[in-house]
Amino acid sequence: MNIKCLKCETVFELPELQSSIQTVRLKCSVCHHEWDYSLQKTNLENNEKVKSFIGLKKLMFLNLIIIFLTILTLVLLREKFEFINDYWQNIYLFFDNLIPI
Image (tube, rainbow, N blue to C red; front, side, top):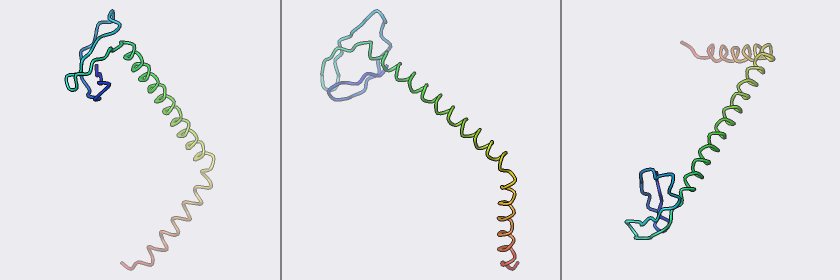
């Protein structure tokens, strides 16, 4: 578990604390600042992780919708894309004929 000093913002790595303990008195080894650390903060950090996971699920869902709409557009407008392909192929042939080999 990472804990940050409130005064100098030094980050310390501590082992997981017992769940029966609600608050712990900590002292920074750098600036000697003392403060009470509540285990409820770790619950807030876990809630933030859950929220970020939910945000990731929403992002994946939106990506799937975009992929589905792209495929649907390609299927519905495939005839028009064939004309576009012919257009670009003619431009390629035009420039290919301009360059002597």
